Length: 413
Image (cartoon, rainbow, N blue to C red; front, side, top):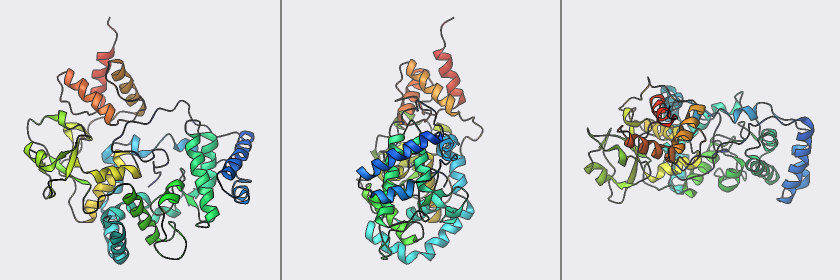
């Protein structure tokens, strides 16, 4: 997957509030400024315990990577309609290859399941989404991690602290001997290996499952998958439970209960008239889920179990998490979604989403920040506006809603 949002959107709870908007547009650092910044980064790394020789070797003589700063503005998870993002990864070829990988690595996956309690289909789905089962690791978008992170640390004024932390972590990996500069290659944001770990995540969660003394997420499939399982387990993965399921809503459904954060027992959702789109609700009176409508009343509906929150901690983009979840289902042989997406609707641009948030806030509906990303707080504000205007309160942000909000926000003649 190119690129992963994990560097920009660190571990958060399910559908947490939107990230604050950037105050400035990132720019490539000038050569003199970059050289000065590199000196400060070497000092910071040494203060954080990186041997000076490691920092000097890794950072001396590098130049800014001109491709990484523009990439911060165009993450596919946030600019594509959700169905386009999902369908780009959940293809017949990706499903077939994933099923072949499940068979090829069955013994290893069994041992990983036993050690970490994470379902193999979820692990292989992460692998498929992040790197197309390793096929993308030699692609055009793969580059040396240290220069990319140094460029971001020196050229992205909105998040320099984040990039500095990732760069120092990358230098620690070099110092620990888990990788050398040639091996340490990744995405523009520094995400590395088969399942695209950021350097800080590597230090916390990577494991040597192959037993060769090195945590090698670049070349060892067992290390990469076990490291991902360890990340998920440490993030709260519940063994024996799924991520959730698609559901069908009854006629006359009260969309106000689809607030995507309030968890109810499956038995209660059943009393409200929800039915599984395929299969059955999970057993267990203690199992609970929240209802999500990514495209409102017009598209598929999902009951999300706590494990879905864990997927979001890997990458907080809703489209990403649904992609991993859906691919895992397809790998185990489940059908596609039973209800189609509203493909004829015009999706809002980032600027329009920011405008919508700004106008809703001006009308007294708190959105949690105007950042152009429609999160749970914005959807709650939309539902409140819709209910006040006699509309279906499904929280769906499309061009028609923006027109309504603009009209309500317009000054009196």
